Every structure is written in structure tokens, then in C-alpha cells.
Image (cartoon, rainbow, N blue to C red; front, side, top):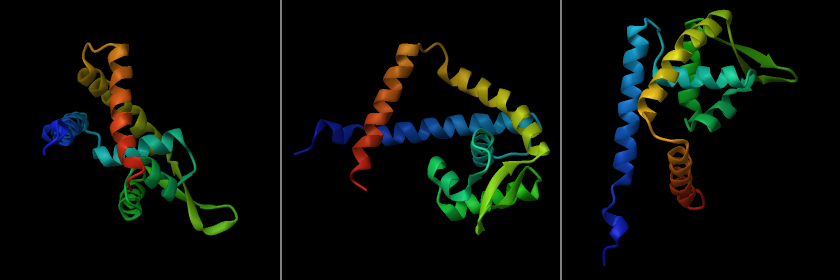
Length: 147
């Protein structure tokens, strides 16, 4: 017996929406001459908000696997946007910081990100946002105890 929810392809809906947003953001970053991918932006954004974070915490908060985070951080370091500093008391761990160039890239990119967020949200209300967060949290939590 099929369940009504078996027919609801919400995953596809979420996935295509994310792709649409990512593509729009990447296009705007490119047009502005900002040498960043969306994934690089996500890491820079988190490092900016949590200076000195570790690669492991970064992997956790961004839901990316540690090797992917390492690869992106390597690229950001090559571009001179991020620096790794040895963690006090543990020479195997690194803390991540934006360089001056990283800070200015963040400052240039943020208004573009904010504009994409505004465009995507359109004229939806605060109540719509609360409802959206509730729905997404609910779907997310349905999987949290299944892993």
C-alpha cells in the first residue's frame, strides 16, 4: 500500500531550489569579479563568524566531509584568503583565520549574498519564514535519529 507521502518528491524540490540559488549566487560573484565559489564562500562566512575555528568544527557546521573542507581550505590558503595557525597546546590542530585579503573579499561578497537572499525570499513574510524553518527543521529532525 502506498502512502500519500510516498508521492511527495520534496527532496527533488529542495535540491532544485538549492541549485537555483547556488547558480544565481555563483553568477553574481563571477560578474562582480570575486574569485570565489559558493562552497568557498560558505567556509569564509563561517570562519568570519567564528575566528579561530578548527577544520573539524567547520566540517560539522557546513555538513561537508573533512577531506572536502581540507581541500577547500587549501585553495583558500593558496588564494591568500585564509591562514592556518597552529593551535596552542596541540601541534596537530590548526585554527583558521581570515587574512586581510580574506576580510576584504568577505566584505565585497557579503552584499551580493545578501542581495541573493533578498531576491529569493521575495515578498514572503516573517510568518512565512517561521513556517519555512519549522518545516525544514521537522524534515531534518525526521532523519536525525535514523542515522
